[in-house]
Image 1 (cartoon, rainbow, N blue to C red):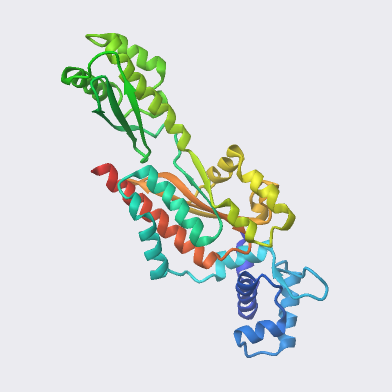
Image 2 (image 1 turned 180 degrees about the vertical axis):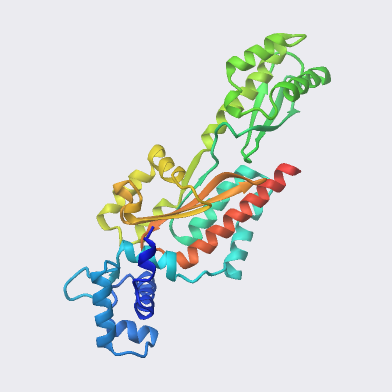
Length: 348
């Protein structure tokens, strides 16, 4: 983040010119010269004045000149100053809002599908890569377990966690799944499994429960073992990447695109990038990302809350030349919507 002294370092005209350069470069991808800037913005100053201001912005580190005869492009410092101080604080436009609402409408009521759909919709809107996470840790609790018989010896089991992850699987037993078995199962679930962290529902814990059950150990064990497997599978939902092929369309990456896609395909470093964000919305520009593969990228991480608790994140990854002014309102709206819809689904 820039130091406070940088806020007063720039005159109003320099701020205006820097904002114009950033916005024109985001739009065109071409270096911005003084005449082009005046033509595009209608600034009522001479080309020489703009050129001198751009030279000073260059010497201060806010702009760069890729070639001697070329115009200027924003530096990482320029993007950071723009995002922190110059960018308009826009609300999401009605068309984008309607596209998001329509895009995720088919997933309402299914928290895990909703998280996945939100990532897909955002990738299509932003033309960048997107990452969704549903963190699994000590605060991810087993909120609900339902079992629905589908045959004499088989049933469909559904598990829902406090952060909206929904898992299901078919389980079979050698004994008839009757009303008495179901009553015993729900008694155990209510007393020993609900509201416990998913990480604690281990096979060893289940063995202990099954052995303590009054009645047929071998009848209850397959059902409780299925609970353990579902709890363990919750961890598979931690991080999902989508839209990475979108990045190939940005000429900004050039030959580094392949290395970036390989990096994004690795779970551990990408998880590290996302989890390093502390605020409700964080923007990491260029080398602010600690991995070299992201030095030409910006990562926007936005958290969604379920019932007041920060639960997961939806992130956008793209070139430093991404359209911050449009993407930030979209990701804010998406995460607010996802958190609200998951909270509603858990209350039903």
